[in-house]
Length: 149
Image (cartoon, rainbow, N blue to C red; front, side, top):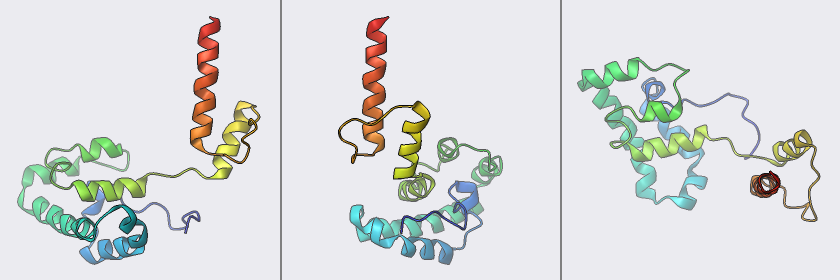
């Protein structure tokens, strides 16, 4: 389930969601249902699909919202896109779901690569290859450096 995507990124920005049909969102939610159900109630999961429908409806009835979303492109930052007035507060479950899809997660190879680039060797906890352990080392070394100067 954690393999790299061969299909590219799913749409994650509000203006991109306008091109999705509700059935596409249902299929996407079903694809990730097991993961979603770990931290969300079924009601919250259902709200994702419901809020997508409400977004489509709002854009069709609110010219200002339609105009604001029309200004977005693939270059628009995720946070900026979702800060569009009337989006973030009205569709929080939708934003959280697509934010999760847009967030890459680290894997062992990425973290090992970071250590290699930094030319550091891991300490005695070699089996703990996580971003947290890398962050811990970076903070420690930064503090040591700052204390020397």
